Image 1 (cartoon, rainbow over the protein chains, first blue to last red):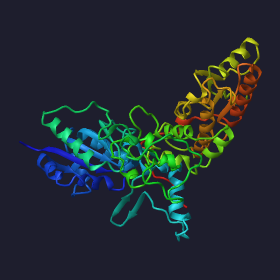
Image 2 (cartoon, chains in turn blue, red; image 1 turned 90 degrees about the vertical axis):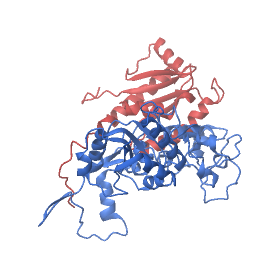
Image 3 (cartoon, each protein chain N blue to C red; image 1 turned 135 degrees about the horizontal axis):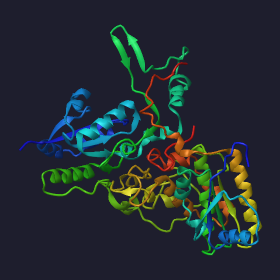
Image 4 (spheres, helix red, strand yellow; image 1 turned 90 degrees about the horizontal axis):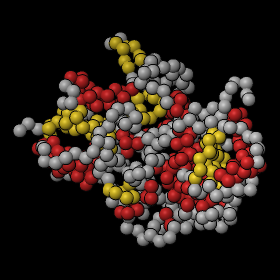
Length: 323
Length: 154
């Protein structure tokens, strides 16, 4: 039997998702038994022209990680959509913008100004900026056009499945690959189109083993300001933990080692906007007798946008800041 | 009426026990106030989630007002305290997103305060008129279609 065709691509991402795939360890051999890798620039030498030469629907499954940050990302997203039967938005960036989505508080020009002229360590007296088009004796050189607004994959092309996480956990990747492989072999069914896969029902708190009692906060603290109790819920100790507004599926690995959840698994089922939900949650557990005192405590969160939308700004209701 | 013809589109989330009745009172007392606000009756101002506010702005509102019972008067004992807790945090976050201070407003309006309701809506309408249209969705142009040599000179 001929093997199925597998592709993986990184758009605006760090490469962690690629490593996460290898984290499935010996199971990668099983992947090799079932799939031919037909496009995976991080792992082997494929050119865009190879990809563009494939027939439509040639690829059986494509794991697309990274956000849509520039014209190159957008072009390849369109090509991979056309060439893939099953397109999976893989990881926090592809599903909801991820960390790069925080760039949506600035414009592209503001970012370039900071990076090439304003940062304290930059020495650029002639204000040299990268040019998108440049002519050299050998011909014309081009760079992709950087967008003002970081987009999610689903804001760009039609997406079949969403798999959140920064990066997705290995056991979830293995589970998803099992389901997809079984379906391709005709031994099982794929989930409904548009489903979020590789997550568990309920919220991250459901998997967290810390002892949870009544949540009543009188002050917010950051993890370096004190020694948190090892057993107690971090949120109850005043540390902003995104657990209540984050889908389960990761096994609550961060909270098990004393780090508050940062929300990389995205909103739980039924929640439209993760950041708005977390804001709502947090304000509801402040314990103070009068509105002014409640307001004073709430106002001590230094960066609500960056905290509640650390991974989800590009995919949120408002998507970006006005600049 | 302003010169440029801009009529603010306002959403008002009104608690059914106090502020919505306050709005009714303003109506039965025949108080005049601008028709710019679309009232939405909620069981409690505490039921109004930040998600609702963001959805309103994302879908074209120029300003959003939340009105509930005065502190201590909540039909559900402490619902409006939740509102009070969410509001400053949400206000701060919306300002980080580039919305001017004042696009979202919290007011306590009792069922007896028809005059206050009319005054608040009048004030808010004029304040938003002065701020101008928000036009949130208008900023998402198709950048792929606009790929052209960009002026990145110093």
